[in-house]
Image (cartoon, rainbow, N blue to C red; front, side):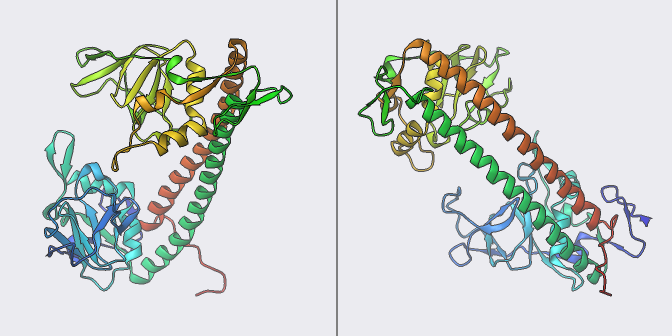
Length: 411
């Protein structure tokens, strides 16, 4: 091994070379139209066909040509890690840098792994220039001077083949754990729906509720419209001069009723005010079932309907049930940002047991869901560990710090 003299790379094998970016790639700056060349998106998972739902401009003729084998990277820091070797011909927006291989000693997959490392992303954006305080861009005139490493073509192939196999194994494990997490979330939803519509005692006499999604309910329960159990809170204020915690849609976990994070950094706008114990229900994309009981006095995005009620846990669990989620999803309006109106939602009917039964069910669901959430959290930690291992594995092999194991019987 030798010191590469490249801070973000560190040591490399003695025989490996160092090259400038422009020694192995040329800038492809050919303007084309997406009418002639399929529009592509530059994502963290690589270069893919652009989705029909993706945000588009009207400037169809002002795009860059991409050929199969080109390396494409988004130049802006807010799209960190969005890059890849394209397997497709097409076109991308001008914010991307398109690079054409100029060196026959390049194995594309090897460089695809190298360019997806955290260390390369750090180096790439270090060469950038600010657009605003927290956003900068790295153009070709900057990045062409970045120093890269160049193993022999055969070593590139060995490393890329090995990493392709190993990362596929890791991704397979992650997919399996993600499937287990989805099963737990579905179980969670079914537990909620079962409890709020059937109760906890399987032996009580039942009656038809007259509501399709509810089915039969214990015969002592009632059916009421949501609006008779809650009072919408319509109080808005400019809170940017106060140190109030802010709750946005991104702060609430879907389908669970859990708060993930809060912040005090929010724009100078008018927000809804919510008090501790109020129920927050997201009218935007109701299929995500983002419902929360406010854990403290705060302000929240106007996309939440703020509801004051004495039955906050019961209302939360009813709004998280499969039936309400399906009904609100079916009742949405708007294509790009589907939402449900409070007028429609408030007229939906939900079960209403006696107060002591409500308390028992609430306590049962609190405990049951905490157990499921703990399992999900543990599985998410396993995924995080695998992702960190994958990042470390890639960096160590693409920089030669670890050698590809020799298969017995192979030269």
